[in-house]
Image (cartoon, rainbow, N blue to C red):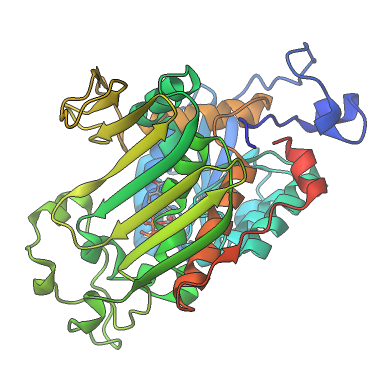
Length: 425
Ligand SMILES: NC(=O)c1ccc[n+]([C@@H]2O[C@H](COP(=O)([O-])OP(=O)(O)OC[C@H]3O[C@@H](n4cnc5c(N)ncnc54)[C@H](O)[C@@H]3O)[C@@H](O)[C@H]2O)c1
């Protein structure tokens, strides 16, 4: 069973003995307050890292970006323009970590998360780590252990937990709107998949393991959150059904890079017209996962990377109703609740409009960064959870293994008990 995470600072842990999970919450514990801005560094400061940096950079208001690490000189040049000429820039994450920072954002490609996260946590730095946590279950557990050992504050970038439509679904379910949850179905329409996931490292198993981690880590986490449990048994089917057969680019020539969301709107449809894809494509573009959670809930997740539209649709079914989202935060997003008997009622019994929130990812990004900066400074409760992040990767890993072995059912190992207790699930 899962709950939101409580995580204590090292000061709190010390004041409560060796096991911070033994501490009670809601009591007033003195916390060393920093009066100045948190000094924040970014490893992987292009792409998503640039977006996160812009949100974290709040000079005079609690946090400032003072160091960036990226392999691309052009990215570091842009970082200097964004954060000022005094910014420390480097290609070596170890040089960044030696700068006496308070907090680090890791937004490198997935296969580097484990190395970069463990290096930051060992120094006791507060860490914002992008999803998916790591490529393997063992990698996730190594990150959890590093945080535990150093007493460092570990935070995972599962920003969907800060999307207003997801939060409203969670609130309604917690309030009993559909009774006891029994099932959840998620259809994930990854329009423009060819533009975002099949042009660069995302297309290769060695860098992502599979798109049931790289892409679905978000949704598996949302399914777990809405249903109040973690997957313990999975099976999956899927395959390479389209992109692998299209002409790829010459591996000797650099790029073409992934396109931006705006550019993706302009690229052609149907996806069979896509050109210049990654020279190696060995991840699946179509998949379906079935899950049984530890609380008896059954869930399914389906992902397709070449739909014309780009959004996710969740249906949660309980003993007293059904809740479904339409839209993911765009203007006009709403939820529908069915809680009376009817043969077919496309409008449901209740419609809940989701007000538009400002900021990227349906308004989730400003919210998640504010939560991280508060957590980095003060510790305390957060809506994202390192244990839940690990469980979404564990589910994605085992589902990927299943679909690559004919759909066999596989058990998802729980987090080792001592670690789970430390992070207090
Ligand atoms: N939470 C979200 O909504 C969200 C959205 C997009 C991406 N992401 C995550 O963010 C991460 C980055 O994705 P992206 O789309 O920005 O990828 P990207 O390839 O566009 O950017 C990755 C950046 O890391 C840099 N980099 C690569 N190797 C490095 C190294 N060894 N040291 C330092 N920098 C290095 C690259 O130069 C690049 O600037 C991924 O893990 C992805 O899953 C999360």
